[in-house]
Image 1 (cartoon, rainbow, N blue to C red):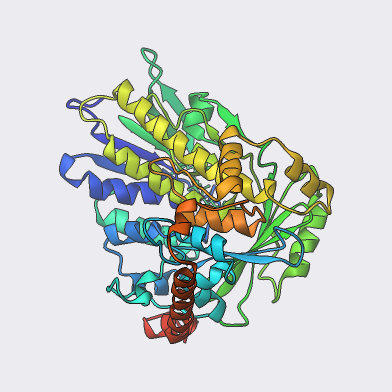
Image 2: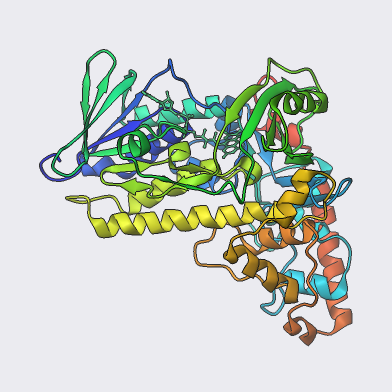
Length: 500
Ligand code: FAD
């Protein structure tokens, strides 16, 4: 360790995780005289997928001082108001998981209890993001809580490679050093097994005090060198392969991600300005690669831009995200399939948590334990939310769907489903990523209808409740129609040549 504590941070990997970590730490540690170096091998390359995000990414972009119009232009981005799920509950059924809130709470009771009481319309009719998505409209929220247009909540779809390049530019502008080279050896200190230095293929040595492993699925430091171990969750999330392919953009992009359930998995459709990102996530136990590829290509609504690219993964998490002087981020720390677009968020969460526990003079076991507990909670709550989409389904039409509908799930999820099934209640732990609105949208969307609702929703007069709900629905419908068309909005805010 350098004199005076952690002074040299070495980030291994230059994918989204590596450059995001570099950009955040460079800003957060600017005054602490910490030097940050990113080592990456362009010969190895990055995974290059990861195009759909969730709203917290906006905070990160703001922290970097990235102008959103410029970001949208440079990364060929579009706006995302939520996810449309097709054929998940049963074939032919659709529902929308919107960002932000749905309806308005009354007397401190969550909106959905009043909706359950009256059964008035589709619950998505009370969500401005859902209504705007269906109408193909978008605008950033207005800064006036009395205006329904303040209730837009959104994220971005972007080209992952262009976004990583933007993060890299931000990091380097804030003093991060970039080293190109392939790491061939990780040297451990005999005294305590901490990583001491890395050796590159040309013989150079890179020394550091703290190493951030962003080397992708393999986990060059956290697993190959430190043998940390992996908690395998594939008995709950058995998808283990994906094929990704871009296709030509032939229509104005929708402001939402589409996820369509298939025979042994699901397909994503992510519209960008210059192309559409498509992928098929599937379970090799129930579908072979040839069929998966053929189904993906058959489903495209425009010409593919190349051959589908195969990816393999095991769902789960590293047993310790922080082990000795190595912190794993991104794919090196674990992976949960991209159904709810959470991986990049988990990188963001990991690096901001690290910043809040950054070692002062030495690596302290109490801080390491705290970090590991927080990251475990983040991963587990995302895991349960994603499992819910498979467990709670009415589909029994293929061996895969029968398998996932019948599988045992974590107790934490069982309890949540049982609580909701009773009277529509959701109990959140502090700091959970997905809000009550998200859980309600997916529980109801997947066909879990509660037997009752919170009796406090009966305290208001029924006619009064119905009138209030009618008013909310009207405001949402009119609000959505008042928004510009999604592509017009992008173009009017400096969108790329493709937008014009
Ligand atoms: P990588 O991109 O794999 O980068 C690894 C880096 O390590 C590279 O720079 C490589 O050169 C370097 N490296 C490796 N070994 C060495 C070595 N020996 N020497 C030097 N350098 C080395 N996330 C989302 O949030 N939304 C999505 O919609 C989404 N979709 C996804 C779809 C699929 C099918 C998959 C697999 C993932 C998806 N993700 C998504 C996850 C997202 O792609 C990743 O979280 C993100 O790209 C971060 O990857 P990474 O930087 O950890 O790893």
